[in-house]
Amino acid sequence: MSNCLRLGSAGLYARDRRRLAAFYQSTFDMQLQDPDADQEVSLLTMGQAPHYSHLSIVSDPIAVRMVFHTGSLTEMKRLWEKVKAGGVPARGLYIQDEGISFHFPDPEGNRVTVLWPQELQDGQGAKDWRLHGDAENVQWVQHNLARKPKGGQV
Image (cartoon, rainbow, N blue to C red):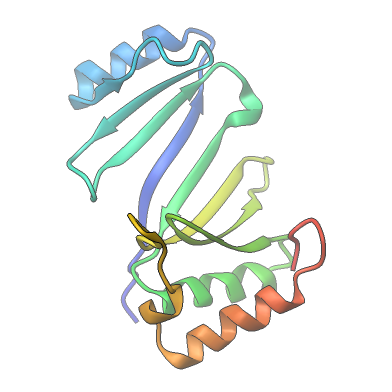
């Protein structure tokens, strides 16, 4: 099975957020988005939508995170089962405008999110996400959503 996983975004902690943002801008030609929008986060992007990646440089270490994009719902299911089999306390599944996701902590407590990115919102409202997957995977998502107690943990 080929691995269809790629890094979609990351959040790094910095004591000097502006200095670190300048480093990534000059080293990787990343673009600073809306420099005056948030005093706690510098958002840098690389590439062109819809295949761009972004890096958040944060001044609060609790905001550190990584988002991995899967290429298919099948790959997401495989990762979900692997994480759960390893005893990691995964939370999800979540269906949001940008796709279906789950998250879990790494051994250092950093938040890791796995996202199957799909445009589940159009100008007229939500699209039916079930049209994006095969019947077996749709059943798997529905089963896990039905098991989800309050608070989101499956």
